[in-house]
Image: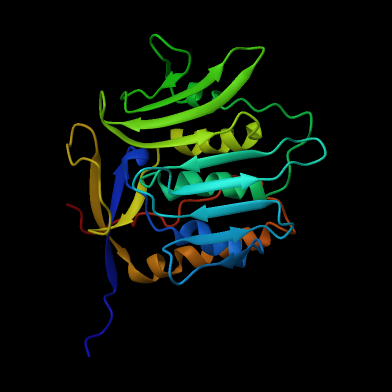
Length: 259
């Protein structure tokens, strides 16, 4: 039997919102193992259900060619109406994971402001033309909130390759806590590439003028341990809140084969 390879070819893809969905385990495994969410599945149905320890939040992953694949629902609380968020199949797991990490992490101070547009402004996103919202510098991602100042509505985040060519859409109900949406837009605007095992992803386009893909050999042990490190990091967060953003799953080697 041949030995396991010492390196794995990894694609570093930018912009990250056009990297494809990625491995759902990046979200589901930490919720279960690090955050105590219980899981249930029906062997006759291609879906996964995860519920929070207090039974107030339910995450559903259900392949739906005509709708959103990920749906997060949260019951009403004493001072918070019920809310929901949903994500299309090609929404990168890094962006969805930012939301679930914020949901399961320490609650922000009541006085702490949270503006989902702020991370976009910091990364030079521009105001949308003809409608309120923001658009990425390359024009392939749009963030918009419906409604006016007095009656704000739902948020919509859309990745697109042009007119009538949507790639995915994320939707946040009007009562979704602002810090969760800000976690999503922060991950969305992050200039770091998304990492995918070479050949395992379905890019919406390979046009080099839109998507940059750099393939590098990464130590196999780093790839294999990335999810476990994420679980351990979120587990440790219960006792010690993080003081800095979570690192990327693994870092590119200083030298190696690229193509």
